[in-house]
Length: 139
Image (cartoon, rainbow, N blue to C red):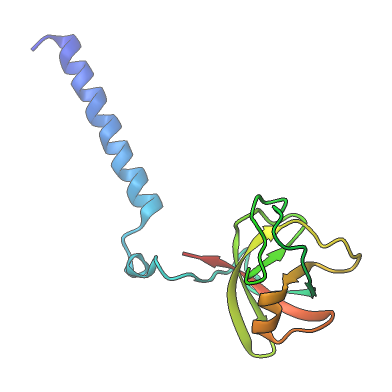
């Protein structure tokens, strides 16, 4: 075997070893690996659950939201000004907890942190402006 070929094989083996180490570090092999398919609240920066003011929003239905989603009467989603579109969050109100996602930008009303779709507000029994708790979900 020529020295150049041996050097190339050694470099490829090093890259492969590095890829394995990175995948183990990022993927994990602990007990949480079997639970990855079930979203659950996750602590972010030591806080976990956050409080916010939210209110239901009626329509408009049928048009595309700022996140590109078609909003229907049965849509279970929330509008937020900065959380990324599609981000999954848990919303808790009055002993009920629902997994939902960011489907639009808003709210337009000063002082509100979230606008809750009508269907989600019904599921949470939320009327008017209320203080809710929310947390990021992790799959």
